[in-house]
Length: 501
Image (cartoon, rainbow, N blue to C red; front, side, top):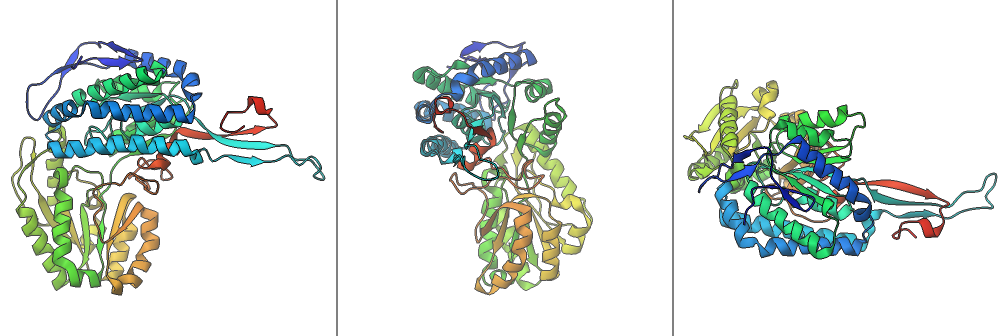
């Protein structure tokens, strides 16, 4: 049962007034408004809990993560019911996302049990070394302290209250304060209830987790500027993320801001693949482009082809496939409005031709398809900016040299995709050094929508895809964001952390 309140270190607390949710279906519900005072309470509780929580063993934290997963699954039907109401996402999508959420919790549990992430190093003492002896030095990664996490609008489970940022921080030994997203406050509260149940069952300090619901901009600002917060995880818009990033950098003690800000995820169709499979690639692209109403940060918004008859086939097939896709409900009214504004921006750009237009209003989204020459794309930086929704832009390059120029002009991306056949390997080899500098993940003959949660995954990239190109928000390497290396020189074994002794 929903309380409509904030969870602050084990206590359900009201806010300063309430706000109404904006569900896609069903009646709105009232939720307490977040305040800077609540943020302060939550962060101070996190700091008070840090020493005890960081001192838990890896085995204890692993059990805690697994118990959170169990408690989320026990509330699965309730989560799906309110999640579909709040977001308009189909139940199958939410059930799949719930499995991803619990799966990554269990993956992180398994990973920290192994201990490899600690990067333990030991240099033995060399007392007889000349001209100077060497002391014993041991190194291990240690948790940074309380962490702030911002829930994402487009993933109410996997990137929100108990999503990857929260799970990886808890795995690292860091207490977490989550600012819930106002697009799905009910879903967020039920997940918070699951985390609280796990805290109680495992005897974890209550300050290890808090949820502050909704609130105005001042809540997010108070969270990232709180002197006891040591790092921030964020998934959202470029504008919102950049504003918070700047606040983190402007602090008296600047802290890392791990923001995942989206990208256009361009596809490059190399000549042989285009000649052999133009229609098949176009059909697959249309499916990827419109999945979830295009509301994925890995949505492949741009396809780069070399002009000619095979490009014509690609365009015609994509147009037909997209025309068959009906309206889809977007996550919020604000996202739907931003999608229409992005559509209008692309349509008005010099040289852009409309291939498929439709009518979308209110909270619905329908596909749009445009094309533009390589010359016009290179002349307009704005054509490389993300439109969050099912909108595709086909860029017709004159030749492979211009395709290379387009790749070089890209800003940082989460993904870049190569469609290639055996005869395209030389061209792919020429593009790879460029794409490696542009993206965190490079795909061949697939579509980037969907991110596998595993050891080898990178979900991040050069700015503006993310604010830290050396980090990932998905996969086991994401735990590294909440750790820092500490060296111990000549410390008695009795004083060393248990994992290093």
